[in-house]
Length: 247
View 1 (cartoon, helix red, strand yellow):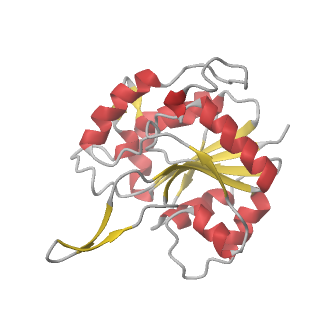
View 2 (tube, rainbow, N blue to C red):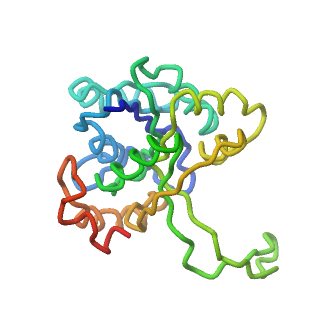
């Protein structure tokens, strides 16, 4: 069985969340912090050997006060991140256990995750070395002039997919991709791997796999959590495996 380490970046500024007391990974959702919903999807898997949450240095004291017992009981490693997401992932990569053959990066603020999707993207990464969840773009896309807020053009959506997480890579491949980053400001880890010329497989995700960005997203996530099946591990024979709701 392949072994995976999971990195949960939670060091962002949450500037669009606009909450006086909480950053979005730490806000309460259905009885627990958002990041804990994300972490718990990986903690009981037999193929996951490590879960790392990455936090901002400025959040360290508050995080320790609120979540030190969760971290200790669940065996989660905590790493201080950097100014940008790729800095945070690089800091966590340096702490990945030697036995982990693959590294999974999953947004700490993406709590509505199904075991089915984890199974699928893990399997795709084992086969190809690099795989992400994504969904086809469904809406009509407009490129808008930023100052006057007028449409410049309508962008064809054919072949366009919205990247999600988890994003999973063979460990050495991801480390090589980060080592070759230079000054390039990647928006996700798949982009760094693409720059090496390595193909990244796409696994069909779901709109349910929502990333919390605003307060409205938080309210939606509370409802979506009710739709996510609860089993820890699901095989291909599970009754939800071919259900259209996950596609």
